[in-house]
Image 1 (cartoon, one colour):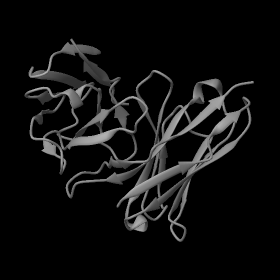
Image 2 (cartoon, each protein chain N blue to C red):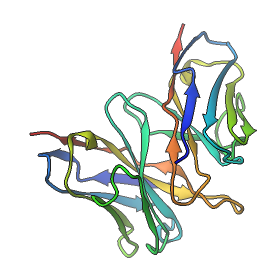
Image 3 (cartoon, each protein chain N blue to C red):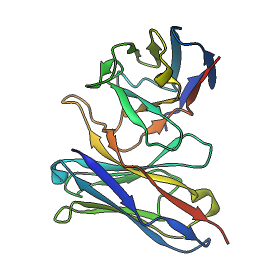
Image 4 (tube, each protein chain N blue to C red):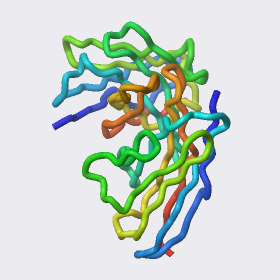
Length: 123
Length: 108
């Protein structure tokens, strides 16, 4: 079955870096774009970044632009999120999600989600 | 950026009730709207895409409608498993995506 498993979360000090991974299985990973979405404690969902199926395009939320980098290794069926210059407000559960679209849409919506990995930014 | 506003933030209802959650966009998004259900400590689950297209396996008591800037999610007859938080999300553009703030559906 389609499965996404995030890893790499933990406690990190402000200003430091962390890299999250998302291992995909059960579908042709190289055929799908992928999203990262986060959820701060007690808050709603916030879109973070998206990457095209072949890695040719990537887009970011303003809140993380210039600090976070989304990437993928299709040979390893793995999605990444490199997070630099972390701030307290980056504390959240981070979800990876498969991106699906309709034949007539330009945007891609998350259809399958991982279980999430928790990042806590604190000194 | 497109802003998404859900109402109400919290909704108290009973098993068997018909409930409606509204999601408004700050500008037209055509029908590019998805609805998700999320239970505590769990990942969101896709219910509906393209405003009204029910995902496979989702009970038919869930329905979505709307276009442009106003959208609704309706549950025709609440079941115990439906008490959760519901999120809307717009995907009008390939480069920017926004979620509503969520609606918590509670047992009355």
